[in-house]
Every structure is written in structure tokens, then in C-alpha cells.
Image (cartoon, rainbow, N blue to C red; front, side, top):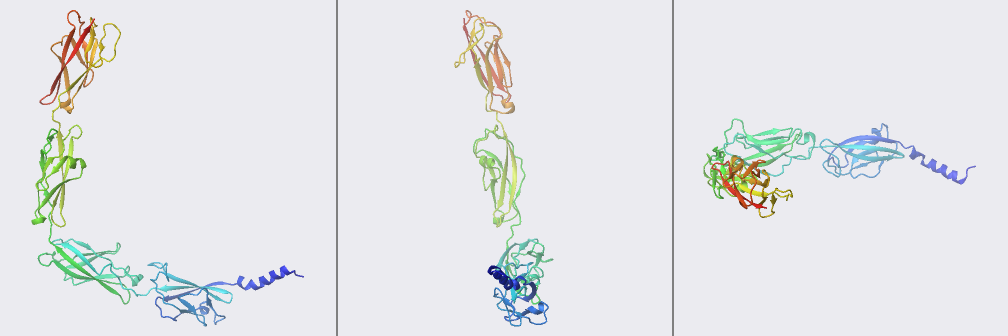
Length: 459
């Protein structure tokens, strides 16, 4: 005998059995968008293969677009627009609009999928009703980009596949050039047509018409205003010129060179303006007269830091739009031999204790030598510098009179020398002696400098 719990479980299983065994079936229908209200889409029982109605269907949940009548016919309940993002959120040029319904009859569930087909209910649309184009007179190769029209419909009903354009009011002057892969559309001069002449007509009025590819095509037009601009058809021509090197002693305001350019156009189209552009260092170092093209120094030059400049000059006419030419002028900076050698005499730094070796006083520059010091004793280290470059900065030194017979100067590097004694000195004969060090560079003309090295004898 069943207990109460088992009895409840059995009754629940029996009551739920029809739902557990309920089948899920699929039905597919199609209908055009904007179909009239209450129009039939299809019969569910016939689509399921049943010869007659077995039971009623009901939609769960209810649909704002479809309903099912007592004969199991699916009918239009509300307006359906394929371009409506609410009704067809995922629809696009290549993605269909499918509305899915759940229809229940007794214990059976039927999934109803209804594909909404596009109709040609939209006309092409331009971004703006009127577009202005500018064409220079005499330009036979102009290509003016035009706005492509868009259409909310898809396939043949839209613009992408079979949409087409044509011009009205061209008078044989203009034609269309279309690149289908890029979707680009251009206004060009018609083949064999004369170039536009500003003096004949300053503007042309056209209509660009776009039609979709539907069986009954929808068309839209855009007004085109083609304005002919007086032609600035010559760019400035710069006369090539090699500028001589300038010395780094050139004063600020000194003339560096002159840019000469011509323009075959007249009026503002032929009036030229000069400016320096490009390299920042050139723009800081030089200035150009915007009217004459004369270049002058704006900041002192230094050959040691900058031997070469490239002055980039922009020559612009004053037409609209302006035509421009850029030319570069290399400029070398010549090192002027404006620095004499600089001589530094450095007494030996160490105080050597051995008898007969020199001592160095730290600040006086006086070399102290003991009486009867050994021949060949090192007295001083001499450094020579010259701020000029190359030959102008290349120096040579020698000993001058008086005292040259007592000392020897030996090079220990390109700009370094050592001063040695040639013989022992007698304190009783003289307590002080000196020798002149003469240095000169290899510039033309050369610069020279002389400096005395003084020696003091100690017993």
C-alpha cells in the first residue's frame, strides 16, 4: 500500500507528464515589411503537415507584430519596418531580419521564425541638399569628390549593388567618374570638352541625381554649384645659386646671400613672399627679407660649433590658393683666423727633494732651480691652445732670445711642450734668467703669441 509521500509524487509525475513529453517544432515563414494589418503570413497546422486543425495556438509571450487566429493562421498585428532597430535590431545589408515567436498548442511548443523581406520603401539620401565645388580655370585633370548617396534599403533596393548616378544640366562640360570598389564618386571634365574658362562662365549649375536599383526606383537629386576660379597656374621658380662661404666673424646684420625667384603669373598670383623654414638652427641664425629675398645674419656664427648650414627657403605667391616652392641653399661657415695662440706655463707641480732638481711655486709661475742643477732637468710643462680650426688652430712653438742657449723646448703632444735646462746655472753669476717662448699658428696670415718663462736660482 502506498504511503502519502509516494502518492503525492506519483500524482505530480502523472500531471506533469504531458509537459515533459511536449515536442518542440520549427516553422519558417516570410513576409514583406510594411505588409497591411491583418494580412495572412501562413497557417501553422499546414506548415506542420497536419491536414486539419487539431487544437488552438497561442503566442507566449504575445508579439506586437503578429497574432494567431482561431484557424491557426499567423497574421500581421502591427506595422513592421525592416529599418526599425526595435523590430529588427540585427538586420543589415547582409544580415536578415528574423522575428522569432513561440506558439503553444496543448502541450506542444512550435518555434515560428518569420523573415521580414525588404521592399523599396526608401529613397536615396544625400548628406546635404547642395554642394559647392571649386575648379581652377584651365585645369583639365580636376577630380572633385562628390557625396555618395545612402539608402536604408538593401540589395537591389539600395544603392550599393545597382544604385546609379547621372548629371542633369551639364551641357557637355562635365561627366561622372565612379570607382565602385572604393565607393568613390568624382566630377570630372567630359572627354573632349574644353577646359573651363573663368572669363566665359564663372560658375556652372548642375543636378546630381541618385537612383536606387529597385524595380520602381526611387531617386533623389543634389544641387551642384561649380565655381570657376581665376587660375594661379604657375608656381614660383627659384634661380639656383651657390652662395660663398661666410666667415664666422661676419657681424650681425651682415649680408649672407640673396634668393632670386620669378613667377609667370600676374597680380597677387605673381607677387612673391620669402621665408626661412625647416631647420630650427637656420631659422635662428638667419633672417630673410620677405619682399626682396635678401638673407642676413641674425645671430653670431661660430665655426667651432657649426661649420655647415642648409638654409631652406619657402617662396610663396599670394594667389588663392597659394603656390609654393621650397629650395635649399647650403652655406659653409669659414673659420677666420681671429684667435692667437694662448700659452700656459705650468711649473712642475711636485717639490722634489733630490739636490739639483727644480721646485715649483704654486701660484707665482716662477720656476725655482737649484744652483748647479743637473743638465736636462725638467723645468715647466707648457700648454698651447688656439680656438680656431684646422690650420688656423694648428700651432708650433720655439724658444726665442734671450736665454735660448740655456734651455731646450721639446714637444710632447700636438699642443704640449716640456721645458728642460741645457746646462748647470751658477748662482754667483746670475740669480735670475728667462727665456721667451714664441708660438704661432698656421693660418693665413698667421697669428702669433710670445710669453716669457722666468727662472730663479736657489743655492
